[in-house]
Image (cartoon, rainbow, N blue to C red; front, side, top):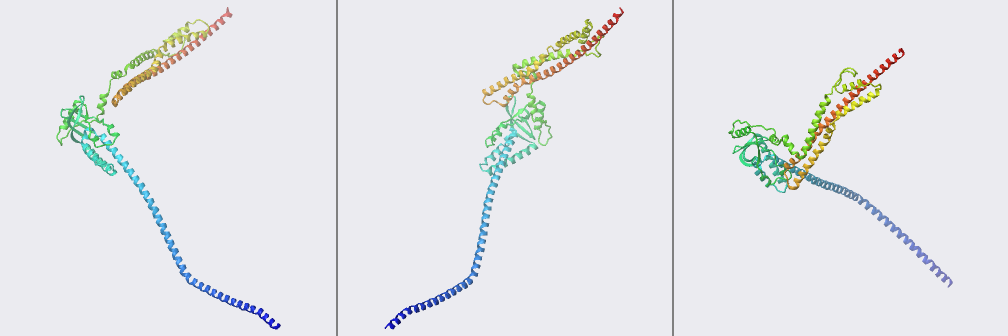
Length: 474
């Protein structure tokens, strides 16, 4: 029974150990099998990866090439876009520059058109006024139409210049002075010269004083070019008028003689505007009379003192107590010879007093010339200021005085300044020359008196020596 129990207990203890050993073997075998399966799968996977690697690499390389191409294409398109933007900006700038240049050209053409019309005599302006107005009416605010109209005006001016160079005759009317009536007749335009022969027999040159203020500040318009005033005829001599009438009445193809005026009529204007000395003095007003008084006074004094100073003869020989001299030099010799004293210093003082008296006589009235030289310009300036005050009063009283009236008033105001300077400058020169001449005469008198004192001192010394020699003998 005990053996049975022991056997049972042993079997009960051994059977789990056998079961455990059997399960470990199975697990080990299973693990080995799983490991082999995993290794096989890994090998298969590696093989499959190796098989799929080459296509994948090729596909990656292909994708990389495509990516690079796309990137290059993107860069190219970006560059094209940048270039297009830059070209667009550059084109816009060029368009702006071209538009600016066109506007400048348009401004130059407008200035040329205005200056051409300004330099054209009014008699010829009527010939081109209608065509210029038509060209201006065709232009609007657009740049191209404005340029087109201005170019047409340029071509018209070139045609006009060619016609003027060759010479042509046309009908018109001019204002005939001095009444200022309008007279119809014929004009001859030959280069820069314009001749007129009226139906009433009046003939001459046309005035070249163009109306510069009307067209210099504003652009030409359709209305402004149509408003033209007739030209003013310049009065000429009868011979000149007859020559012009005869030349314009000659039939076509006949040789005609025309007078030539290189000054374009300015010589006649200048000749008519010249005034005489009396008229100019009358324009000086009240202040011209004291200026003329000082001028006459200084002239008389200068002539008198010049004659007085220049008439003093200069001795041609050395000073001596004997002999004969002229003028103040003889006075000094007689004074020195008649001196009986024995003190040379006293004789020197006496001769100096004689020279001082003669100097006062020579310099008498010379300060009046200096006063004239200083006063005349001030009087002239006072007259000018007074005249300018009158001119400004005229400007105040009249809203728009004529430029010619203002210029005449200013020129009349400057007359006193002109005569003041004409008086002062010669007076100043005369005073300087006469004063210098007086100083030269006084210097010669002083040298002459010094020589006389020296001779007198020598005479005193010789007299004393003789008296000293005679004393021991006595």
